[in-house]
Image 1 (cartoon, protein in one colour):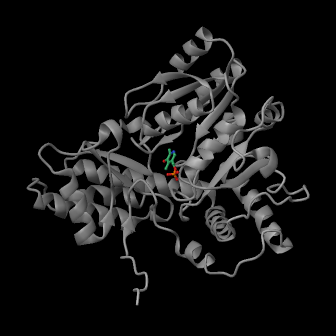
Image 2 (cartoon, protein in one colour):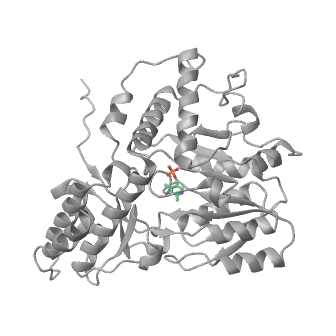
Image 3 (cartoon, rainbow, N blue to C red):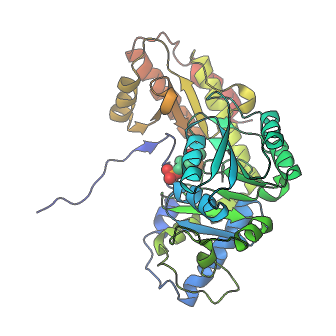
Length: 392
Ligand SMILES: *Cc1c(COP(=O)(O)O)cnc(C)c1O
């Protein structure tokens, strides 16, 4: 006999996946509907409307692609880019690098604007590149760089991009549901996200949104989108309130239930309250970590609340600490990626996990485990500093 599947219970406070909200888990044990059942189409319509609210947009072309956040990234690039198009990408972390790879695979001529990992992309450098290279079609940046914990300001870049009549693309995988995305107000032409970060649903769907300008650019393509699965010209006929709803591929029904429930919870709490909650507990985590004597990778002004990179103190064993947190506290945090491997830990406070008890548990567990590693930390200082900001 093969044992029943019984994974250990963890607290997921790394860079994603993050813990799924209990109501979202519950939504996933409901019976299936057929993907063309009118009852299911209604659920899709509701999901689209909720997605617009959470993305803060009126964009008609707002839907959930099948696949994880990276499928969202691929969707945006394969649909907007044709071979030979020029694309300008801001690279200040792993996900910027991934966009470069994806855009190159679409046959784009990619120009990069770089910043050190842990810093923002400088809008002036984007401006210079747009002046230097003519006919750049798309400019893309990562709004919430999960590999570093940087929050990229978007308004100024958006302004510059539109002055040059390019399309503005943002990776919002870790920002959606964690901080304002303001698609319409900022003027983002295409964005993609994932369900497993601040939406507190399992990995499996990639919400995307496209402005009317982006839809127009796609409509004028000369060549077919090279990906059949991600081709929006066909997918839009299924994910659209007023089309005949043609079958393209079988929608992942259960995942769409989970997304609808996750979005419902966010909208019911109120977007502003959700953002304020992330900010409050992010600030309090930061204060606690600093009181413990740890330093953070990103300067205060550009820090995300939902993902924090902590510099690993000299002489402390990265893997040993993460292993101990997992074994002793069942607590998962992330290690560094790319050039930050072995240099930082990444702590997530995403969606459902952006709560007081998670901050308290994290600080207490980390203090204990770091003491085992012979770090000299005064007992309780982290919690004291964190608590000061918790009820503000
Ligand atoms: C997680 C993440 C992705 C990739 O999402 P997957 O769900 O792992 O495919 C892309 N961009 C950013 C900023 C992310 O945090």
